[in-house]
Image 1 (cartoon, helix red, strand yellow):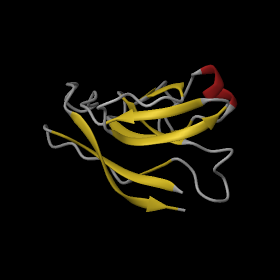
Image 2 (cartoon, helix red, strand yellow; image 1 turned 60 degrees about the vertical axis):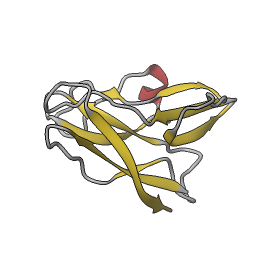
Image 3 (cartoon, one colour; image 1 turned 120 degrees about the vertical axis):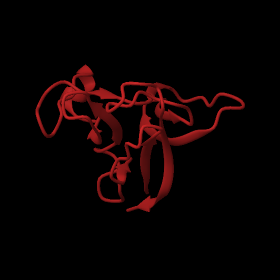
Image 4 (cartoon, one colour; image 1 turned 30 degrees about the horizontal axis):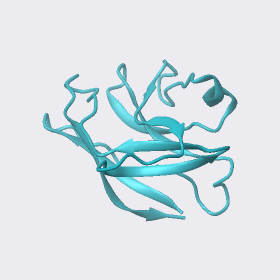
Length: 122
């Protein structure tokens, strides 16, 4: 079951609801993660389980320019005393993590963007 998250920044920027992870029908081939486009000034999601994702090269669905993903992929191990907004198993002992911390905001270009969980989807 995937998660629904939303981002907001001190500057007033707020994203749409972001559907991250995967659902029952596509969890093995899809892992949507939050990302941003500086050109379009938006926060959206991208599937990292694609050929482009394996290379670490993602394009904005709107303008097709290069985008950057939030969070990190690393070995399956949770850090003590760290709260995660979202995490997802990628198989082969790898996991995607989105920590509960401040991130880069594409609107004001400051590290004031935060994510919060708002529900689940399937």
